[in-house]
Structure formats: C-alpha cells, structure tokens
Amino acid sequence: MENDVELGHLRRCVELAREAVEAGDEPFGSVLASADGVALAEDRNRVAGGDATRHPEFELARWAAENMPPEERARATVFTSGEHCPMCSAAHGWVGLGRIVYVSAAAQTAQWLAELGVPPAPVRPIPVQDIAPDVEVEGPIPELEEAIHALHRQCHAGA
Ligand code: ZN
Image 1 (tube, rainbow, N blue to C red):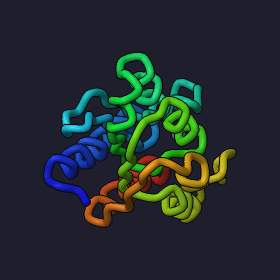
Image 2 (cartoon, protein in one colour; image 1 turned 90 degrees about the vertical axis):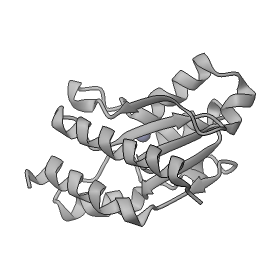
Image 3 (cartoon, rainbow, N blue to C red; image 1 turned 90 degrees about the horizontal axis):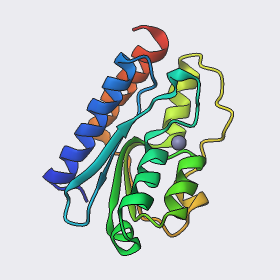
Image 4 (cartoon, rainbow, N blue to C red; image 1 turned 180 degrees about the horizontal axis):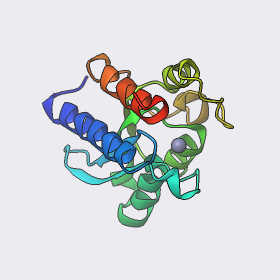
C-alpha cells in the first residue's frame, strides 16, 4: 500500500485538483511517477476551454508514450485524484502504463455529482479494470477523499 512518497504524490494530485477549480476547470489532478517513485510529469483538468477530453490522465498517457520506453511505462504509476474515466483508462492501457492509485472511485465521484444536482456525464463511470483488465489499481484513499469531495462541492455548488 502507499508509503510516504506515494502519499505525497496523492497529496500533489489534490493540490492540482484545487488549482483546476481555482482556474475554472474541474477538480481532477494526476501525477506520473517512475518505478523508483520520482514524479516525472503532472497535469490537471483543463476542460473549461470547451474540450471535454482535456483530462490529466489522458495527457499523462500521451506524455508517457512520447517520453518513456515501453518497459519504463509498464513499471510507472499514475496517481490521480479521481479514478480514470473510460477514455483515460483506454489511453492508459493502450500506451502500456502500469499501476494506478486513485483517491476516489469513479462511482463515488458520480454519486457526489448527482447529490450536487450535476446532470449525468455523457460517459459511464466504468471501473478501470473493466476497460484495461491488466492494470493494477489501488483506491480509494479514505484520508484524502473528503478534500476531493469538498473541491467538487466548491466547483459545482459554489460552497
Ligand atoms: Zn478521463
């Protein structure tokens, strides 16, 4: 399970999600780390400009494909504030990335958004392993979930 280094990457994901909300985007952030735990790349949600595919996990999959040989991708870990959507799970699987650690599950996020009165997403919140069955997945991380829930409330309810 997560050690202090990995918890640090997850906390950075929460920070990136906060930066996204403050910029008018949605509260999602992700960090790509090498097999030895070094953060290689990070990104946050950038959908406010009108392109709903600008998810950080998708950007990191493309970054990995451009910058990492296949064997390094397979040993890397993507930390993320919210479990990958099917688009990002597919991208993760196609480029051969390794493990995923998420703070909150896609189904949990969907429930939070429904409670906030947000219309259902146009894409179903299918678990990563239903899309990319060979990817090792860990989560949720209960100690960080409330921070993410609060960011969704801030994003969608002005709370
Ligand atoms: Zn996505």
